[in-house]
Structure formats: structure tokens, C-alpha cells
Length: 157
Image 1 (cartoon, rainbow, N blue to C red):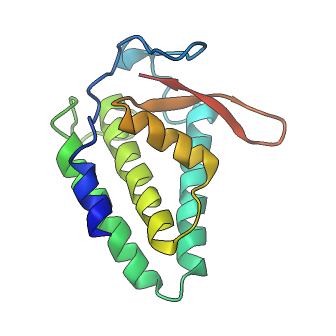
Image 2: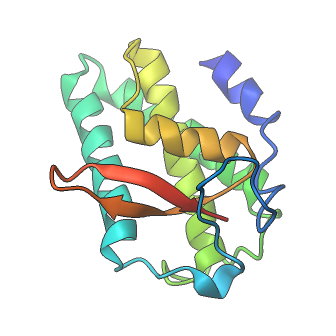
Image 3: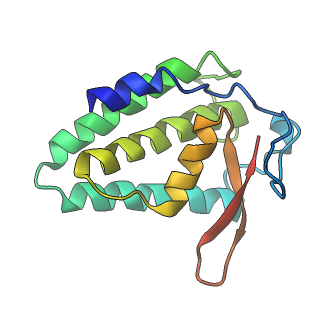
């Protein structure tokens, strides 16, 4: 766990927002106002799935309190690292895109830490979100939700 927390300092948190991406076919949002908001199904589903993964990992653990403490430690560290990188407002709600980006980064990092701690392969959708954060981006919403309910690709900032 300490290695994962130490590695968080090396992530270029939100350093490449609004820049073109080298990956072909990736949709990007031009600014914070272009984000569709937390009730858009392509956004909602990301966070529903993250909560489900969190709950499943804790439920499968013999030491859920310890696991929750690890999640909380990573979550707090990521908020500390990212809040100054965007116009974060701790009084804002989930409709404020920069604040939501910070919360999303913290949750995603927390989940990746739990997967590592439990020695489980991460859910591919969460791992894909993590890859975007590690690239200095925000996977702001899914492109589509397919007929099986799976998220397909992300629109990034």
C-alpha cells in the first residue's frame, strides 16, 4: 500500500486537460461547461459501477474495516494532490465539473489501491479510467453504454 500511495505523487494530475490526445478516435470536451453533468446516464453509470466495485471488494474481504481505511487514505491523498490543479470548490456539489473531476480521481485511485491490496485484477472499466487519470486527463463520461450495459470508451478532458 505505501508504494501505491507514494506513486500518486508521480501522476500528472489534470496536467493535460483540454489538450488534443494522441489516440485516434477519442472524443474530448473543450471546456468544463461541455461536461453533461452528473445525471447524464453516461456519467451516472460510471459512478454507480464504482460504488458497486467498492462495495463488492469490501464485502469479499475478511478485514473490510482495514480495506475501507486504505481506501480512505488514498482518497484523501488524491484530493490533497488534485484540488489545486483545477478550480475545485469544496462547497460545490456534483454539478460543478472541476469538483466532480477531483472526486472521480480520488475514487478511481482508491479503487485501484483496493484491487492491488486484494491482489485482484481491476475491473477493466475502472482500469481504463485510471489510465486516463495517469495521462493527466479526466475520463468525464462514457461514450456509450452498450446493450450489455458495459461502458464503451470515454470522452475525456
